[in-house]
Every structure is written in structure tokens, then in C-alpha cells.
Image (cartoon, rainbow, N blue to C red; front, side, top):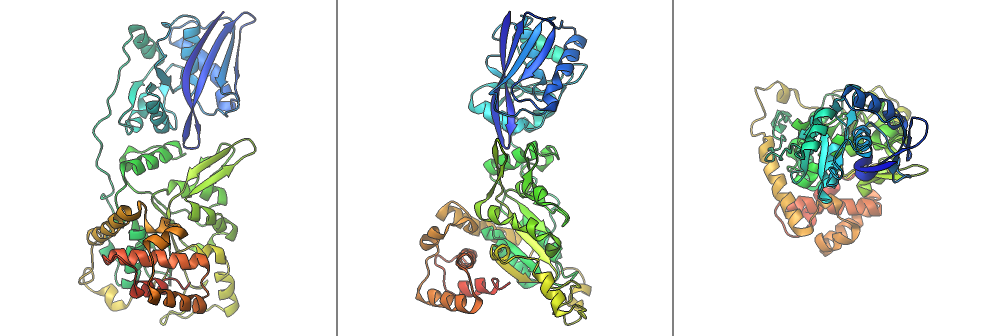
Length: 500
């Protein structure tokens, strides 16, 4: 009778929780039972482990094998426990030196031939393993992903037999982390100078980038709304290393898989208007991140905004305020980060030509009212900037090259980064993340500014939330101007962007 324990990691949202794989060999009819709340893929590991051990030249014990995945109340899913189970069986039958895995954690799925295959969530597991000062044995395919955690001790392996041989020799191959790669943010980013005209919209885009504000673009078809939205990521400051690691960890657990070439690049997500609420916020039996989490520290662009179901848009209201989303299930609650910039685009009416002097609107007032009524008031109240994008004049479109004096993305980004630096030095966060109480400290108004806002609240019917968002935008406008205090001109410009 023998007992062995191997440490592994389960994935619960962005948290890689420690799991102890306990293997017991006892008397009785030959059988292999897995307990500890395993889902189907984990229960099926018994056949993969048996085949991988025998094909790799190891004996499979003809005893009653019980594998416990502790803690028992934590759901386990995926093939990540195959390799820990196989090593636990070898340890329990003394085919491996005792204590050879005491300072390591193990992840990996096994093929029937003993090949060690990649798993999801290797980067969060590497981060947690490093905090506990242990090494991580992982599939070689996951090495590039896990190396983003520069302090990790990583031991990549291709095959079960090679791993066992290395453990017998007491010399696991260790791959040091390479120097950090430069961010890919400057690569293939569209240039703001390519957008003809739309000077007011470009100004609003600069304000949104500087303060991290949400924005809604309203205009006829072909006016440049999508072009403007696509250029926002190029205006944003580069990710810090901590932010880049968080973005990479989200990609690591997503169904799209990890792509090392996206390191340091701010996410830009543009889901189709047929997306469901679960697709946007995340969910499922085993909660997965949705579009708002995949857009964390980046941009979420919703084109044809009124075509999204109203109930789908309303699920964005809470994460727009809190910066995270809680996925609740009967037995467990998972929290995903969702600090994204929302950029939405829409036509003013179903045909798209309402208010366009060169277009002939065919919509009745009732059709226009129903179309615009698809957006709830509470949802619109959470958007900082409402910007009209009119049709561009023919002379601007047909002229040679770019607009004379049009600013390139690099020029605008320099001002954005300067304004963002002021915000971080002053309050350690962008202006869009300021709480109501912090506005009194960092965006105090003089008597003239308070009078202007009182008049605006009466005429525009601003809510308390809308008032605070106006002050945040005015604080960003002041930062772009290099001003220490928020003055009346800053508030006046912010109010121009407030009326839906």
C-alpha cells in the first residue's frame, strides 16, 4: 500500500488555484477511480494515463488506484491533470525517486503515445507558482507563454519518458526567461491622418484616449465612424508590464488561445451585433471570459449600436462603472476584470440620413423614435462623450493625399501620453476612473464653473452621474491643455459632448 502527492493548478477564472493530486495504491480488484469534483475531460484521463504509461514503457499497477484531486469542492476541468496523475502513479509504485517533485508543480495533457500536450492557462499558473517559490513542469508548447513571467523557474518537457529520465537523473532542463520583448503596439496601427475631415470627432477621440473615457459616434453611413474607432488603440499609452501580463493571462485562458506576437498590444474587440449577453460578459457552465474581459485595458467597439438587443447592452451597465464582472453560479462565483473603453457607433435613424443635408431620410418620426429608443437611458448616461460625425464634404474626400496639416497618430499620442502622465502622477489612475469623492480633490470647480454646471443641469436635465462624467471629461481637457485647475472653458467644451 503506497501514497504519493503531486502539486498542480486548476483554473478558476484568472486565478490558478493549487490542487494536490493524491494517488493511493491499495488492495482490491484492479480499477482507477478519480474523485474530487472532476468534470468529463478529467474523468476520461484514466484511459489517457493508462495508455501513455504503457506505451512509454512503464508498468501500470494491477491494484485499486484512487486519485483524489484536493480540495474536493473545487471544480476540475480540462486535461491539465493528466501528467500529475501519471507521475503520481509512478511515485506511488516507487518507479520515481521519493521527493523528486517536492519543489515542483506539474501541468500537462497526455496523448496516448506519452507526448505532453499544451494546456490553457499556463501563464496564470506560472505566476502563482512563482509566488510559492516552486518550479513549474509544463508542456514545451506552453514555454513562450509562461516565460512572460520572468521570475518563473520553468521546466518544459515534450514526452513523459524524457521527463521520467530527467527526474531519475535529478536534472530537469530549465529554460530561463528571455529579455522582455518590445511591445507590438506600434506595428500595423492605422494612422489618424488617414481620416479626412472630422476635426471635432478627432478632438473627441483625443480626449477619450487621454482620460480613458467612453464615447458614442452618431452619423450617416460612410462618414468615418469605424475608421475613427479603429484608430483609438494607436492613441493610447503603452501598457505597463503589469497590465500586459494581465492582458496576456486573459488571452491564456480564452478559447482563442495565446499568441505571443500580441504581447504589449492593447486589445481591440469588435463583436457583431448578433452577440448574446453571455458572449459579451462571459459565462458558461465553466465560466469563460467574454468580450468585455477580452477587451480589458483596451477598446470594445460596438458598431450598429441600436441593432444589439437592449437586454444585451444593459448588461454592460455594471462593468462600465465597476471595471469588473462577477459570474455567479450555484456553487461558485468567478470575477473577471473588465476595465475597457467603450466606443459605440450608430446611425441617427434606420435609413441613416436623418439630419444629413445631402441625404433624403425616408423614416417616419415614429420609426426614428423606436430606433433611438432601443438604447436605454441608464446605458446612454454611462457614456462620457456623444459626438456627431457628419458627412464629409466632397472636396475633402477627392483632394490629393491627406488633409493639409492633418496630425499623425504619433503627434496626438504624444499629447495623450503627456496628459495621462499628469493624471497618474496626481491621482494614480486615469480621470475616467475617478470616484465622485475624488472629484472634489482633483477637479475642484470655482464659482463660475459651479454656476455653469447648475445651468447645464437645468437645461440638459443632467443626472448626478452625468454631472460627474462632465467634470471628469473637463478634467481631461484641462490636462491636455496643461492646466492645473478646471476652468469654465474646459467645462463648456465637456458639456458640448454631453447631450445625446
